[in-house]
Length: 270
Image (cartoon, rainbow, N blue to C red; front, top):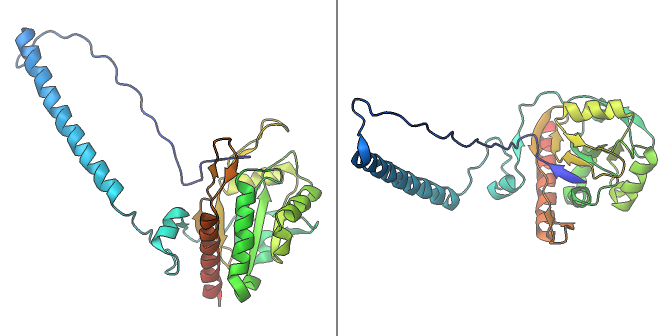
């Protein structure tokens, strides 16, 4: 599995400027070689000034600390919020779904009302970022302490070629997610899965059963009233050989962040 850009990330490109055509001299436009030299000299001065200004702006930008996103819980440091790309959401009702978990239990999202829900999208055959997020889930559960009883950790399957309950159960055992009492790895008919992906802005590319599943990695925090509260963007690094990893310190930081946000939402629910 390979991750793609999260809902809040975009890429942009610009086209090259067209080649200017030749023009005759006109009123106010310098003519001949001397005139062209004057024009070129003026352009050079403008470009030099622009480059200097741009370099100054870049240095200022790189040297300045990233601003703290508004609406972030006070318990979450600015550095951690920026590392997680944590974004407050407008508390719209989270899109509903009815799917089946790794234990064969079919339930709607609304069945978890009253609990804080931490939602990720995972591939049960993933060897990239999904196992890392799984470890963060397990660690976050333990960091929550008694508050963990008010939190559900869930995932929705993004692999339409491995969509059986047995696939969800095997992955849950492999990554020790089944040690979390409030864990649900949901799957179901492909049309229902695709609806959930669309509703949560998850792009999935699965050209064939043997290809890598490329999908958006997004972590949603849903409050006890069933409203979207925060969105985070899980990360992963890779070795020169392409093996996915994340330093233990970063995994611990992410687990702490997940636990702090979930605890904050649970406390708000009373």
